Image (cartoon, rainbow, N blue to C red; front, top):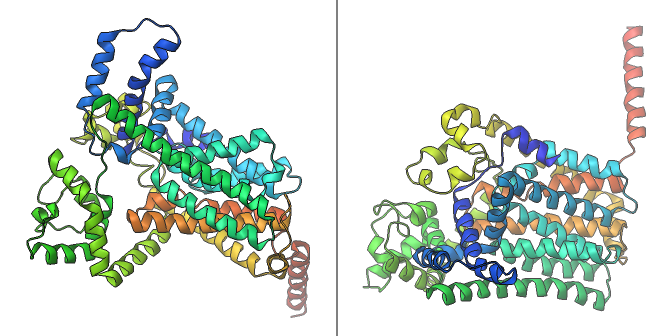
Length: 505
């Protein structure tokens, strides 16, 4: 079902960051080639290995720490084996399996129609298929949240293979993007609190939280290991752009503090750019024009200096203007919650063929049927109206949210929460607990991304399909909150009375 939407929309899609992930995967393949050759006893081409090592050393390492090599390996491998269609199929398969496993954990004996109806609705009416067919790790943020809810709430229901699968989904989510780690840490705390509320035993809570905690630690270790390997092979450290500096500058308090600090002969490298507008984080980081951009418009030594002073600059901004920064961060959080837009997953592929910079990257090669897009741009242009589908998704999300609020207000759900009975797989307690985790996951994701990076529609759109999914599963498990047959009989009775009055009149 998910792949049908990807096919109907034209093709799997890419984003500007996809080029970085592909480069990371290609670099990892170069590093692994000698090891694989030794294991499989394949004759080694030393000249080729030297060329690969030199290519790694020549790469710009000032941004590589911001992109996951592990998602890069998945992207690169899928493309080399079966183009982006294979990546879309793999991501769709993982999404379909994760939703199925969650449903199995919160419904006693789920029939096929339950799962098929939920997936059919998500495919036709939600953002999920567009992110499943997107060459970016965004889809793994909600899947990690679903797997976390399933594993913590319905642990006894799953066998070893299912538990291993859920752990693998969470691990992939954390390895594929740093923001997912922050979301997972918050979800661990939320899950522990919910399990405690429903009188779950201390040993059970410790076991589930311990497993999730080990996954988080492993994610940090994997990142450190990657940095160490690159340092060992190329002799250079990896760096990341100063995202937080760009955020506080664009928010306003950073600009105020920068003017104050620079007036006192501050040693900040940022003082060189104090006359720039500094009101857009994307321009601060990525604009090539020195009159507007900082990071991308600077030489490597300046980029490294900007990274090194980031912690001090951001901390001093918060200390000097705490209320202003708090207000700006909360504003970004609330704005992030309101954005549901597919302009990035559904961007016209022609952009990557005509843009002065992107046409010379790997993106034109990655786009399926790219040569046809170049010859006939209108053929590859997405036929789906972004504004129209945003209204559709917004309506579905609103209806799902209202329904969840309605069911939460009903006596039967309130009784489940207040009774605090231990959670059993498939019970109402399991559904209520899992739904609470998923709703909070959407809210926390908006906080993490909106406050630290900025309000961008992609960050919320990738998660928000969780709400109608939770609403659909709730409707199947505990009903709509009223008896449909009674309501139907009531409406028919009113209609008959009206017809009788009209007949007498």
